Amino acid sequence: SFNKQFGNIKSLPLNKWGKILSFNEVKYFSLQYGRVLNEVKEWNAENSTNIHIDSDVDHMLDLDLALSQIDAMDIVITTSNTTAHLAGSIGKETWVMVPKVPEWRWGIKGSKSNWYESVKIFRQDSHLSWEQVLENVSAELKLFIKNKRAR
Image (cartoon, rainbow, N blue to C red):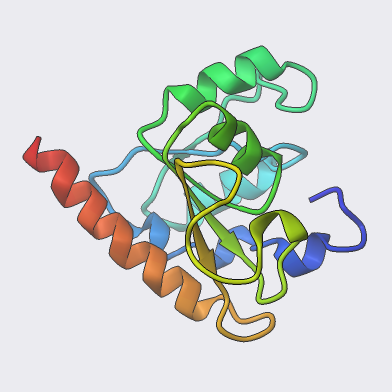
């Protein structure tokens, strides 16, 4: 996040995403804006998961292309950032992981977004602890994959 005040609180480093990125049957795409190419390349080199990244898409400068890329996804899993709002604004199924004390947009309780019907909120149980959130998202993703396969 570029937000200096809340960026570290709501951000989740790539090395914490292991449980979510552990499903071999999933193709993962990074929608993260900013300079993340090297981090993704390092992750791919060290793990069996291959996260695809299109460095030609600048999510901060080309919203049409960013929205097209988001719309092509089956689901968007993200932290509280611009990507969450873009995905929600086009009705894309989106799971947003938020800190214990989130920005006001996400409210303080519940899993439903007041702004976007397609967004489900996963909340920290305790300050700066992402473990339970990651467990919950991973379990939900497992069900999502199973249901997708059954269609």
